Image 1 (tube, rainbow over the protein chains, first blue to last red):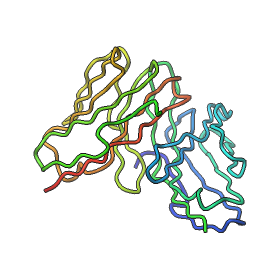
Image 2: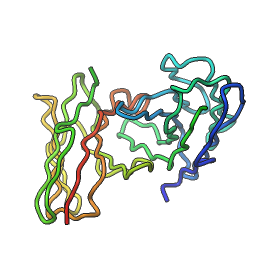
Image 3: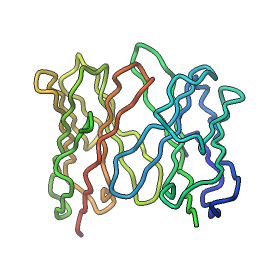
Length: 114
Length: 111
């Protein structure tokens, strides 16, 4: 148990569906992240929220839409996805500081687009 | 290419042996971290080493950092079958704004 909870753990959706991934952190951190992990590719940073403000958007297609209503919750809204978007989506949080921070991951949400 | 790149890509050893994985990076860093990922699960933090540190230990783990060579190594001593996992290095280049992960090393420890 890392203190970062992701739901659902598994999701199968059609290309015309709209769904959302949810992440909640119980660590009192001030930054939250979405990463994408595809087979045979390194972890790709998608979005970073720092104090609820989006500070990083790594050229992610607009069919992925993040939402951070407060510092403990992070959503990833999905719509009109493509089969190549099938991957493990990992949420993470950290306490950003100059002292050096550790990033804590959730267990991930396995997404399959059919 | 990636900021962090692990070497080797895959490593297979017998239980009880030591496993060494290397990570190279390209830009200046604030710290470097190592993570473990069991198949299909989230990443688990193992150890953080700051840019002004050269070596750190945690249990059976030893991490070294050579900033002049922009490289780090992770040594797992007396490996166990439960150590079978993928291991990733991550560089913190912007105080948490951007952690850059390498492609990982797949370690298999055979009983």
